[in-house]
Amino acid sequence: MSAVAIVIRVLIALMALPVVLAPLYAIVPPVSTLMLARWAMGRPVERVWTPLDQISPALPRAVLVSEDARFCQHHGVDWGAIRDVLKSGGESGPGRGASTIAMQVAKNLFLWQGGAYARKPIEIVLAHWIDLVWSKRRVMEVYLNVAEWGPDGIFGAQAAARRAFGRDVKAITPQQAALLAAALPNPVLRDARRPSRQARVHAAIVASRARAAGALTACLK
Image 1: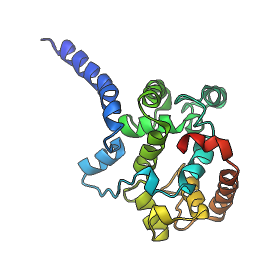
Image 2: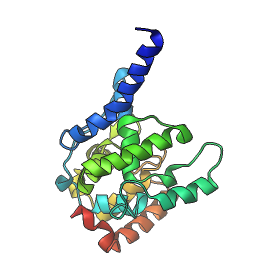
Image 3: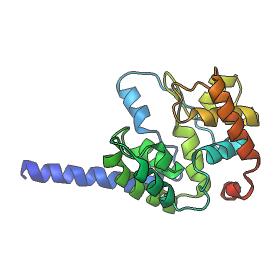
Image 4: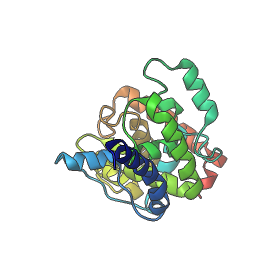
């Protein structure tokens, strides 16, 4: 077998792997590529897998209104948001504003950071597949358990709540949930344990939107 044929087979296998793993991850707790990279480099990872029914309902509401307000309406991809961001995108490509929660799950589980123009088409395909084979509750559950949520290898809502507030994520208040949601765009710099004034203002807006979310969160019940 030629080297080219071997490379092609490897590429096909890599492309097929997420398609095969996604249905398995509907029932098995997954880990993210960033977590795997940290383990490979001997760096710490702190994550305690926590089922959605053991997470304060305030947190998925806050994350939904902050990250993906049409989460319950779209099928993994919010095409309107993508079109808006593509129109205003710079040289680095479409940013986080174009990403739904399903797209962020696809990136966290199977893809890489940066290089949005190269990554985004694959992310879109995988987000549709994830939305097809998982329930909306499972998408949110996985996101809350694999998202990076602080410096030094803090992943998932439970580790984040314990670090920031010294309590389990089931016991956090709506205000604390809003602080965690507000930190997600850059949790290394936006520390929910020591939020800046700007972060507190952002969290107050998130908390207000979460209180008024109503039908926006119906698919999580």
